[in-house]
Image (cartoon, rainbow, N blue to C red):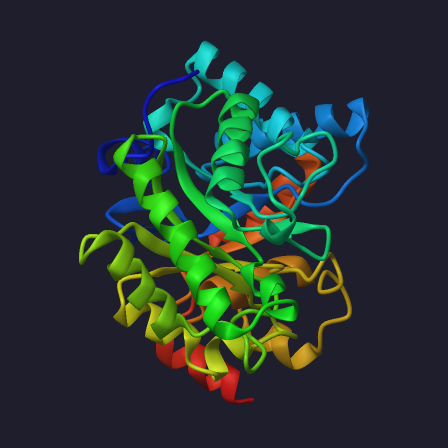
Length: 338
């Protein structure tokens, strides 16, 4: 396994190789990170897609992207393995160093062929698909470390923990989250992760789901004031605005928690047909995909816009957004109000 993790010095080193980046990098948890990150959610579980993803990761890093997002259950471990192959080549050739990249993965869903035998009690699993049991999270983390070839994961997300609320009451859910956070604090103390968080779909968007204030309170109970619960991930795009309108993103920043936007292109549905008014307001980007990315990465309190990119040409097209600085807050809020 490759030792190390993203550091302020390493991420600044990578950013310095792109001096004309026009605000493409942003200070996040003391790191210099690209405002566009590469996601690895969709695609067939075959060798051709694996190879394409590995090439896309290489193209992304060569283009200055240093945030890579995945999950053990993405393409049934194939995405992690493709990233691991790409990282191995990048490190071997010297095109990148471990301390320059933020690598994020997730655990929570039961993945076929990746479920530990004899350790999960029936009550540890809900819906025959999801678990937050510490013994399960530890097993999943170890699988991810091996798949990625990394001794330390920069961000380890509990994946869609709101799934549990469909099966257990709030009090039991909080008990499970506390146990999961305590496990993550132990992983951090052992050097297997640097930070942890929650990666959600409905959790911070729909009422009666996750309460960020309560989760941060549980993190302080698990790890004290210097806890490692420092990231949340939620959808934010032109069609899904709740992370801003319901105050989640601003409140997260008050708590010192960074906000990563998933689904910036809404699984390619925002790559064409955007209204002309938006094109006129987002001066610079020349494609609808770049405009949608620009919108998300310009949102106040949103730190990184994730885009799923399985092919190098997708990476190169989406990197065109990097040629233009994010909107300032006044300009964004004026556009947002429309």
